Length: 199
Image 1 (tube, rainbow, N blue to C red):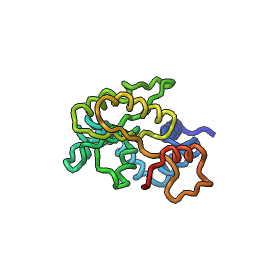
Image 2 (spheres, rainbow, N blue to C red; image 1 turned 60 degrees about the vertical axis):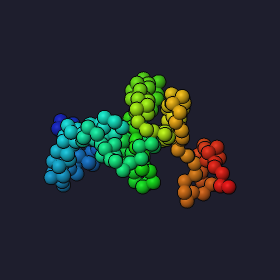
Image 3 (cartoon, rainbow, N blue to C red; image 1 turned 120 degrees about the vertical axis):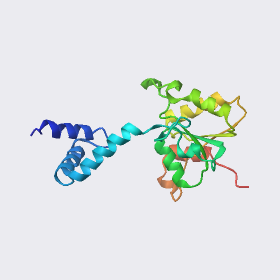
Image 4 (cartoon, helix red, strand yellow; image 1 turned 45 degrees about the horizontal axis):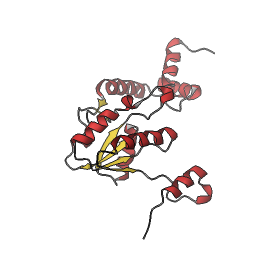
């Protein structure tokens, strides 16, 4: 069975979302058209407005409606701490912990030569300039614990080694509440390598 061109266009458009395959896109499309027309119109309006009005913070590169985001504009943040992340959603994850009060820099990706993503695509020159012109004393590399994330953090560490600031990497390892028998070997190896002294 083939759908009308507009329904097919809606289904195809919904498939751009991560984790949404053909069947999920069909269910979403028919739900919006049959059961929630108001929700569909609100969604369309919100998407149009967000795409038109949301850009990137000039300082940290996270998503923001303003030229400078609320975090960068806040006087209550510790400007001596700068946490480097791969994505704006990572900023939200760190903020939700309530345990960090520094500032951020968002790379919007990681080094991936095979995909043609180099240092210039990640704003590393901008990061270095930010470190040189502000009071950053510690750079926290919080890229993802993937091969690309590790390579990105090593590259950045090499770029800042002569700037006289502390460079740290977030710990990776066994999750709180986890049991060792269920932890994969790579994660356990990271946990052992990143162990810290208690005394």
